[in-house]
Every structure is written in structure tokens, then in C-alpha cells.
Image 1 (cartoon, rainbow, N blue to C red):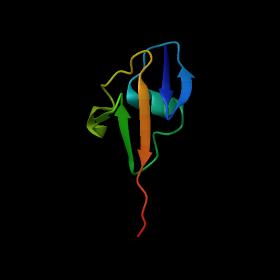
Image 2: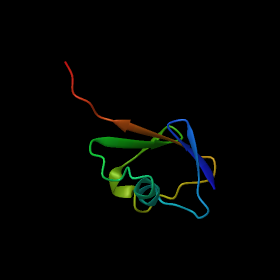
Image 3: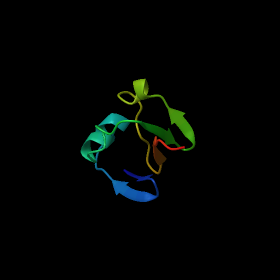
Image 4: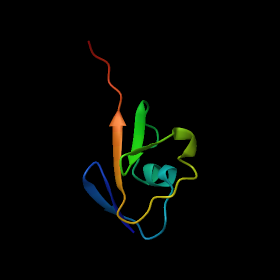
Length: 67
């Protein structure tokens, strides 16, 4: 299965949930992030059950402070 995260291609042999993929990529512990798959925001409460599909485009957005 192949998909993109922030325009970088990743490939996993087995189907992954969002949480599983973030864990394998060492991004699960990041705070202040939001996930969108194919331009649809996926609430964090659904990360454990939402399966990534082949050729999905995933965007990880990190909140920042500024003024």
C-alpha cells in the first residue's frame, strides 16, 4: 500500500490506521497536530479506527504560536 504524507511517499505492506502509521513514523507523540486525508480533516478520536487507503494523500498540520 502506498500513500503520501505531506507530499512524501510512504509504502507499507499491510493496511494501516492513522494511529498505526503515525506510530511507525515516530509522529504519534507530536502535540498540536491535525490530520487531513484527501482534504478531509479526520478528528483525533477517529485515528485508531480510520484506515488509510492506497494512494491517499495525507496532510499533517502542526499548530504554531505567533503574533
